[in-house]
Length: 206
Image 1: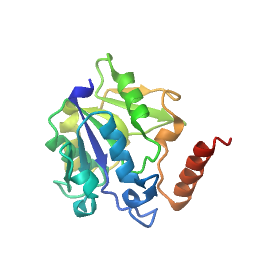
Image 2 (image 1 turned 135 degrees about the horizontal axis):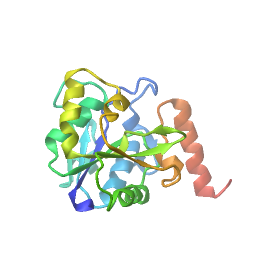
Image 3 (image 1 turned 30 degrees about the vertical axis):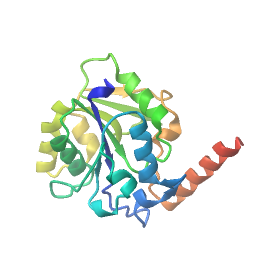
């Protein structure tokens, strides 16, 4: 399936709770965005980065032949406008949609998500679940769901989960992915928690 999947990184959020642009936060050898981009590209799929400040995307990503950077093609409406933009620009049957604030999403977890969907039919979206809730910005969406997202944009329906209820969703059960792979760093406190977990993994401490 991977040959017909296009990765999409949504990096256009306002980061109001973080106070600074989340995609620019220092992480490992780069930033949240550069590290996630590196992991996506390691899986061997092309990558579209949707950012309303495309000029600030580092050259190490933006200049690559397998990376495309774009601003929203439609009026900004949170993740919905990013999804619609991606659907309009990508021809592949499936989009792997990832928010830029997933510091522990890596090539192994991406491969696991693709593996869960492989061979299963009848789904519009494949969305992981953790702690009783779905994670729609770490998910697979079929191209044929584009009209549903276009309608959501037209109606200014910004709540992803409300639109997702209109889709046939294959839920990735809790435990299939590393729980930290679904961890969003939206606040300074959550960023600090991610740093502590990264340090724990490096040192092997429990």
